Length: 380
Image (cartoon, rainbow, N blue to C red):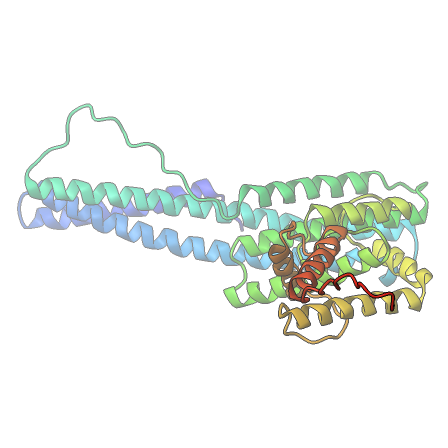
């Protein structure tokens, strides 16, 4: 049985009111109830209400994290629908329909957590007011007549607005993808539309999962490291395929998104900017078409950069042909020293500045060659 948030709030406040009435009644048995007695009873009631609100928030947050985790797992499971089910349009549509229950649970959990957080803020404000009233009662002062009510308390959102908006947009795109799949939709188109929408939606919910505090600090660091390693590898492969010319920095920024979109457009895939199975396969197909020689050339080039930076004192890592975020930082340090834009990529400006610096260094270190005096003899 589900109890709506409004009824929970009413029951909680009714309980607090009963606590106040009992406290005042007990005080009345010993004599007249003073304003201090009433104020102290109010403070005790509001402290109890705050404790209950905080417990409700903890429970609601745990429920939201559990529901959203289940939803993310469902998205991940059905994101690979073509690889895990029989290849029919019906399977694609059914896979999307099977997400309905975990999706509703996740949204209900989010709403309950937001309501519980608002209740905590309200309880904190009411406790603050009760303590202020007790202080006035102890000092013998009275509240000024006609004093305006305090402004409604505002709560800090569970996650940044941008994260919530990203989830909302991804949900809308997913609904549009599902509605666009009919029995007449070619299987390839249906799977591509579905997988692209699911991957984007899963990424959005993962971001919300982290921003809402559903993972520990240690898990957050591990997830960020894994995401950086994945993005670094993706940028390297996109660069080898000729779609990416930015810094290999492990950040899935606008340049990476544009490179993925260019790959998707060239491969005839839905242009989403996120890497689903179809996009990953298209990228691997292009790399395979380039052949092993291209891959070896890339490794050799990276190793040459590492060796050069090591000789110059900007790199103390291995010379293994693997481009990492640390190598990008080393390139940026060299670029700062050379006075060029620190892009982290070995571009034409960096190479030219490097050669210029070498020439200047050579000219500065070579001794001046003496010019021979003209001879008065006919002898050569």
